[in-house]
Length: 322
Image (cartoon, rainbow, N blue to C red; front, side, top):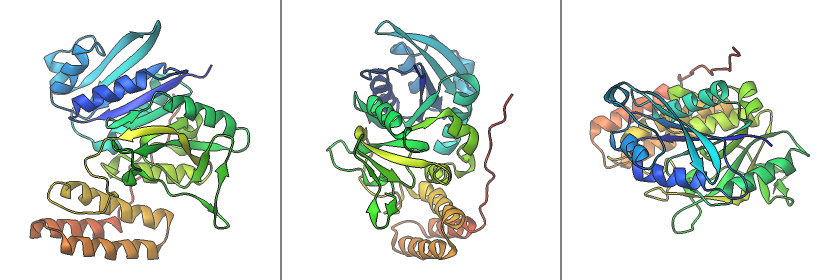
């Protein structure tokens, strides 16, 4: 039986993290062997809540201030789940968290598959089972690179922010009726299922992206040599505040995310699409900035991030066998 490790990256959302962990652990049919929690230097409320609910054994002041790793064997339904709580000593963003978490999975566990997500991803009870079923079916007919769950909002609507691009074949979507899957070009880090060997061959997410588009870049990179699929029967709730596409609106609250998102999107387009794609989105972003209700200095910073995107070329880190 293949071993499955779950990875959750969190930052200052302790209640959501707790709900996410409970949903991941309480899966039907299949269970995880390991759970890696990467904490991007959250406030003390996060480790306190994990301690109160028995997910970590203890922590000391030095651990809160300087970070570190806590290991705990959590008993659940007569099974043991190995919990690895990795607290960082600074906020590395989602990209840094997934980079480190994927590296930890590869180097410190012997699990065969990684199931990764943000802390605001709440899987349904059969989400993992349907991913595993799809992996088993699809691996018979193609080289599977990654599988993604269908993401919905709390109201049951499709979550626009995390919708993947459906791959087209002569104008038709590539569809597998055996496991209700659509072939996709990329996917978000919101319930992504990936085999260990794919990480070895494709490398890690780019930590320099910090936030936004790191998942887009990583899965697009994987899809160059493998097939990715959206598993329609595997459903997760993405608890976001607004059901918008990632770069739909610029305001004072999400300004800092757009500063990275615009830079990263332009860089991704240049690496995986074309000069014209990058030019089109640059003009689109400039229009968004012009109409945004933010300070002039912030508009200048966003404009600079677009320019920077044309020269942003971080190195892809590869697996180093020890």
